[in-house]
Image 1: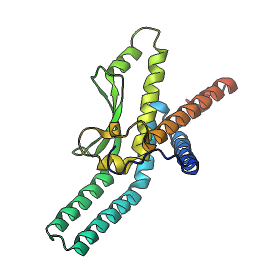
Image 2 (image 1 turned 45 degrees about the vertical axis):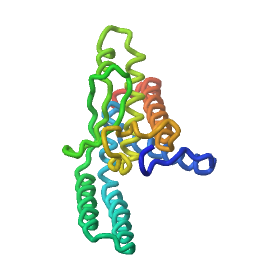
Image 3 (image 1 turned 90 degrees about the vertical axis):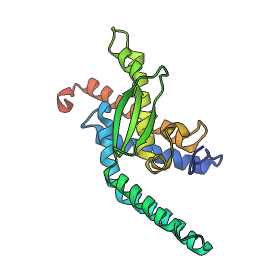
Amino acid sequence: MPKGATPLPVCVALSNQSTRKAKEKAYEVNELSLDYHLSHAAFACNILLEDARATLCQEITKEIDAEIKKVRSKGDPEKKIPELFRRKSEKCETISKLRIYVSYLDTPELTAYTLLDKQAKQLVIWLPRKLLQKCRVGDSYKEEVVELRKLTAHELGHAILHTEKLINIEGLSGSRAFNKGSLEEHEAKVFAKNLLELRHKRNIKIRDEGTIDRYF
């Protein structure tokens, strides 16, 4: 489990609060993505990310300032402080330009993950190209489309709910660093489930009311 990850709590109250937070965020993203449809829900998440940038930078600044204070109180070498200031500046710059980007990866596993591209300053959601190709071949591809949407929704949940933690994860593990029992995985699952349910309900409403011209 990466630094900062939270074990899934036994406490029911905290679990309910976490579930409610993920549901509320899924509702917010769904409302914004009505103009883009689910395949473009990343755009809706980027809108929310823009709104959250100032808060994220403030949180990072607070954390690093606390580390600087700790270094000074312990009488540790002052040479550590410039490095902490550099980290603060680098992370805030990344957040100020951060965007969510969806791409496809050639991998035999039908899994997905979200990884920070530091150079491009993007949270890249990597989806399996193999699954995408199956969606484009033949007439029997419903299961593949459903699975691709589930993977996308799950990783969008990580990107919008766990932005700061993904930025802090070192190496190439990205969202794969969150183990199955973590709070982060729980929240991403709740987010994905609710986002997809909201989209499905909307589509049913359009079909039943015959109001397709209002939306397309």
